[in-house]
Length: 123
Image (tube, rainbow, N blue to C red; front, side, top):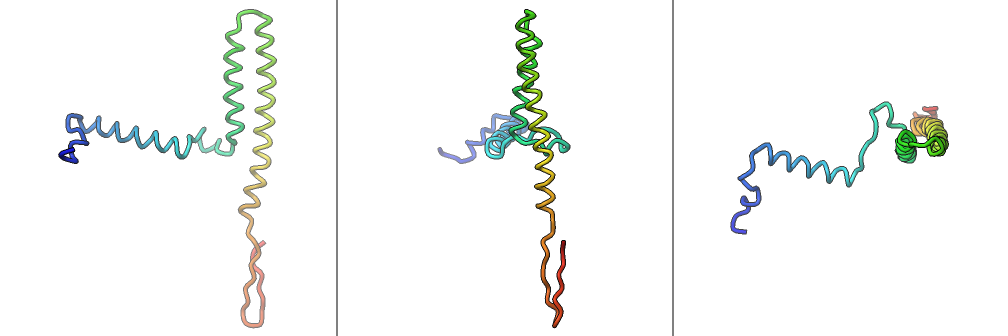
């Protein structure tokens, strides 16, 4: 390598260089950090529940593409089972998540000594 600037490949336009840089940063961030699913309102949903939601969605597609009545009924029962599982997992996450956040945000009592007085502050 005669010149370190040769690596930058001046043949590409600024937009192409930015696109290459941006895609590299985004792909490495996704591999390291993982992808966030759903809007802010749905951040409480656990990754296990998201996997179940994906399985249910695939089962729904299979059910909708079934051609015979027997196959449709079989795929429908699979879909109903996964639907029930998703709802149970979401309810469990919602219940335990709210308890966990309540415990996490609860203030621990602290003791302060002011001269001869002891003052307790907190819950």
